[in-house]
Structure formats: C-alpha cells, structure tokens
Image (cartoon, rainbow, N blue to C red):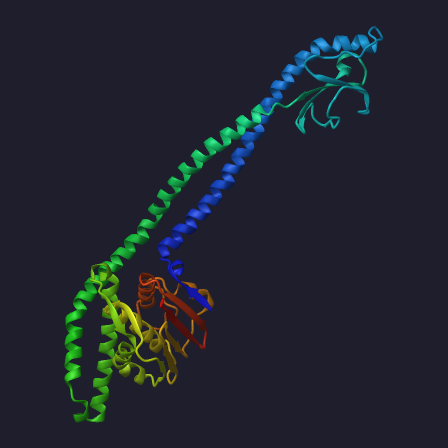
Length: 393
C-alpha cells in the first residue's frame, strides 16, 4: 500500500534540485571537514613548534646544571622553574623524574598527550652518554579554543557562501529543463485553444444523430467517432485545467457526489462498453462534498479514464463511494513498483504503450492537495490498480 499526500506530490524539477543540493552539501561537508582537519593539525604543529623553541632555549641553561649533578658536583637533582623535567636511561627507564604524565611517545622529539607536552633531548650530543632529558609542560589549550573559533566562524561563512553558490549553480543547470517545460506548457495552451471549436462541433453533431435510424455498420462508425470525440474532449478539459488552473474561478459548493459520479459514468459509457468492461458499483446515497464542481469533475473523470484506459478488454471496474472516500479499482496492467512513487508527477506515464500526456493523475494530485484530501494507491503489476481518494468529514 502506498499513501501519497502533499509531501508525495513532487515535480521533477524539485526532486532534481533537492538531489543536487543534497549531494553538493555532502561534498562540501567532506571537503570542509578535510580542510578543517588539515588546519587543526597545522595549528597544533605551530603550537608545538613554539614550545619546542622555548624548551630548546631552556635546555641551554638547564643541561649544564644537570651535568654537574650527574658528575656528583651537586647533591640535589636540578629543578627547572619553567618546566618539569626527567632523566631517562637508554632503555627509556626513568633515572629521576618530576613528570606528571609518565606516558611518553619516544618516536617524536615533541608530542602532545593527554594535555601535557613532552620535549625529548638526547644527551649524547652533550657527551653525557645514551640518556635522555625530557621537558614537560601543561597545554593551556588557548590555541585549541582559538582554532575551534576560527573553524566554526570561517567554516560556517564558507559553507553558507558555497551553498548559496551551489543553489545558484543548480538553478542555472535547471534552467534548460524549466525552459523546456515552459515551451511545452505554451504548446499545450495553444493546442487546447485550437481544439475547443472542432471538438465541440463534432460532439454536438454526433449527439444529434439518431443511431436507431441507421444500419448497424453506420451506427458502429458513428459510435467510434463519439468515443474518439469524448476522449479528445476529456484530454481538452484536462489540458485546459492544467494550463489555466490559476485563472479559473473557484466556487466551492455542496456537490451531490453520487449524482455527479453517475453523470460522469454515463459520459464514459461508450468508452467502457467498447472495451467490454463490467462495472461493479457500491455507491452510498446522498454523499455530499463541498468543493468546486469543475475540480470534482476533473477528479472523477481522471480516475475513471485511467481505469478504462489501462484496463484489459473484458475486465472490470469496481467503484466505491461513501461519506469519506471515492475508490476506483481496475483489473488492468498495474503499475511497476519502481514507478509507483512518480505517477503523480506531470508528464509521467506508468505505461508508454498507452496514449496520453501523463497529466491525469497529476491533476488529481493537485486537486487532492488543494482540498486537504489524501490518495491511497495499491497496485500490482499485471493484476490491477486501486486508487482511493479520502476527504475529511
């Protein structure tokens, strides 16, 4: 079962734009994250370089005092006022230590670990054997707060700028598609204008003919003309509604849906009889819905038209009408699962082998959205489709 409401009615343009923005944003996050990591590491190295220089200068005054202690000239291990110190043997074992953090990374000369900075000095270059002097200082984390401030501030500004740039780029890329849709709408508008007069003339003349007075062969020909004319008339009404929807005055009045549905079934009689379709009606009496009559007709007509068009010859159509829903079920070709989420988009057709513009269900979706209704679609490929429109009581 698939339920489609306002959130499920998406135009191709909006879907494409959202996909582009999502992928673009993910790409930006990855790139900015990488840049932020590199900036963080560079700031950390700058901080460690500053401490290294300071500890090297401190070592120039401390090592002579350490040398006197090692030679036995001083009885007390020298204390450095600027840093905590320790002396290790060639195996990394402590000889004398004043360190707060005894976990030392011997792979690098200066490291930051658990909030403390360690600087290792090899005493071999000072002719004091294979021993190591370690300076330790607490990390004041000022560099970290400044780094995060820069990352958040400049990262946010850069992200906003690039998102605005990406949105502009997306609209620029979508412009050809929007132009194509506009040209198609203009073509439809011009076509519907030209169709109105001849279709009306054909229908009025066909309806005035007395089929009972004709032979069977001629009556069948006239009947086919009537079916084709009504099909064209339905397409004309859909195209007119789609293109001129915003210009059509809306007059919401109580509509007897039972009577209107029977009226529209009479209109489609020649079409469903031609395909030998059997109707199964479950219509409650006195079902009233407050809405615009033109929109109610377009809603019913498109559901019936699809059930006829996509049905199999000799199939059946079940129509249910209650106080809160209209359901139309056919035994037709059904809709593939991968296309089910797109059937309400303009110019989308579930089966291209059947004629049409792919606007009927889009119009249904427009009307459903306008009146805060809900559409439920249950379809199985090769078995049929059930579409139910529910309205608030």
